[in-house]
Length: 293
Image (cartoon, rainbow, N blue to C red; front, side):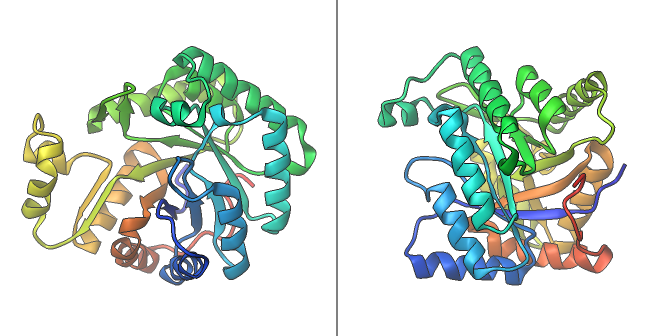
């Protein structure tokens, strides 16, 4: 089943109230379907930021991308979600993950649990949220490990793939083949779960460069992945490099092969990605509703 594209910008950059409102209005002007907020120390706080975004926009949906479940008491988080859903007039979509940055837990004075325990806590948060009838928002679950993918297969409206891995100190990217393997594993979990409607699949683009000189753009990224050839870098799913038309073709190809119809960019790339949205909207209309709603 091929779903229509949805495009999101993940807001990472703090600013004044007016700066925030201006960025959110601009995201709507550029055609983004969702305005998202990350959950890292030193970045905007998710829930008040989303309420503020709702006050100055009308069309985009609003979401977390993704909440660090380890930061939250499940019952108190359910209250936050229910209130934010109400104050955003039902536009909220909730993204959850296990959390992966040990230093942030240390800074916050919250124990950084072993990986298995973090997944257990995420499962408990999901269970608590599902008890809260007023917080029945679309749920996105992000991660690449088998247990998190199983949770997504059972509970999520959206399964989000990062295209990378983090071992606590070092980040590495997934090649196209590695990401395809993760998607194939996830599809198997969906079959096991007996889902009537498959989840929407999300991919975060870590780098966007609209250019007619792809080689130069690859050269800029090469130091981050010195073990990859130019051809392998161009094939990385987390990179969108080329003209707006070439990137549009790339995203259509990713959707056809791996089912990624929901694409997120980071806010430094918000303007640069705008022409890609415009290009794809000339080929396909914008979605009217949340897939699976």
